[in-house]
Amino acid sequence: MVKIYSQEQVAKIKQSGRILARILKILKNEAKIGISLKYLDNLAFRLAKESGAEPAFFNYQPDGAEYPYMASVCTSLNNVIVHGFPTDYKLVSGDVLKIDFGIKYKGYYSDSAATIIIGKSSPVAKNLSRATQKALEEAIKIAKPGSHLGDIGWAIEKTAKKYKVRVIKGLTGHGVGLNLHEDPIIYNYGNKGEGLELKAGMVLAIEPMFSVGTNDTIQLRDESWATRDNSLSAHFEHTIAITEKGSEILTK
Ligand code: MF3
Ligand code: CO
Image (tube, rainbow, N blue to C red):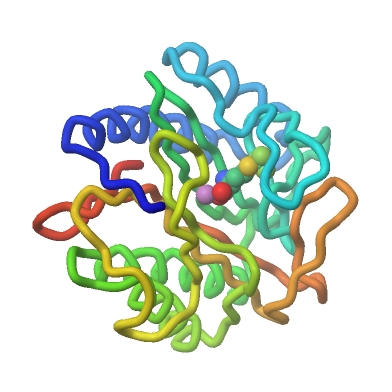
């Protein structure tokens, strides 16, 4: 069932989202050559706690995972798309890093992710990252009362085509609010006018994931998801609310 949140509830998710956005910005600034993924994870944990929030992924068991996730932040490198575990690995120039973070604040969840390129970036990586960010923007633009989930997927897919990159299949966005993952499932492809009709009060985590190679995934031993052909991938995510007038980004 897709929840309709009251304006008061949306305001609370926005408080959660604001804190999350501030922390994610710090993590992006700290992610530099020589910095370990574990350092970013510890920092995320500390900043969340200092804000009175809980890291939402810690101890969370995603659908299809065999074990709960034992870190605060997901740090996915290069071919890894999502759920990359923050190890001792130290970032090197050219790394395409996806930082995905979620918090629970006063009972309300928010979820957001971004891709950054460490040091010197190749034109291929830059195009991929830009494409994914642009797809999220386009998806948010089209999300309003009366639009459909298929419109969101369509906008994302159209952007991928424009930038000549591929939409990863099998990994999706989701509703968010009182739980980290709620209905509906938000596919990154679709047809205009199809699927659930959007209504004011819906809160959605939209998360396009693109690759420069295959759209097929493989689950690695640490339960992260990577591209099957090891090609570069990118991921951006915002939590948004559908409002009477259109939509509002809650994680900025
Ligand atoms: N942020 C992921 C998502 O976008 C959820 C990660 S859950 C974890 O939905 F437990 F794997 F970290
Ligand atoms: Co998410």
